[in-house]
Length: 318
Image (cartoon, rainbow, N blue to C red; front, side, top):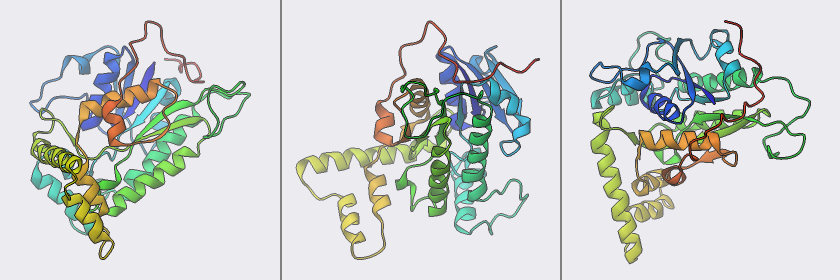
């Protein structure tokens, strides 16, 4: 298996690359910088320097820059826009607040280089669709045809190449602006209509990693505590804050997403990465995958033989 990861040197992207290499796969990452992943302390881990790991400079909205890499890949994962782009990804509470202010202001707060201040439509919808279409176009022509509703196991139906899009849980709102979620859903809908792809849409809520993003640890601990308390109160038949919020939504503003967030556990970024690998391997995974399903997904036993190539043409000449 050869995997193409868009944004492989980022927060979740690096975890996906690491998990894929542990499966024995070859991995190519593209990013605007093309730099290998390094830890927050500035060290390059062994997996990042692996001969099976390729780091390439390419922009997601410029297909010509990575079409050859897409052509030799068996599967693709798009991670750009996993969280709020900009300061949030640099880490820290102040950075997160800056990105939220920019988002809620419709892009009016923050200014700066417009190429760095992509709006949600570009970052979360258009780029993902461009990558998916580029990956689909690189598939070898086939005599059969497939649709999103036709199983890959049907006779004369070509195997559809797996494409994972990192989306977001609905309960991210109202903590995250609704436009963020809406553009994610628009990207999902467009990718699902590409016949040659098996679109898989991971919908995590808050992701944390104590080593890579220490600032995510405290919010994750609080949300995990909230989820545990709600579960215990629910088992006792005691009214919960989430239940009260849902009741209040019938009379006032809709705060059901917030209620859902109070009941949802955060996910370690490496848990999401393992779920991505499991979804790529097992052909029954398709469409949206929610938090609870991702928590329990496990990759298949490591393959001793290479997994089949998904209608990809031969690699381009070197």
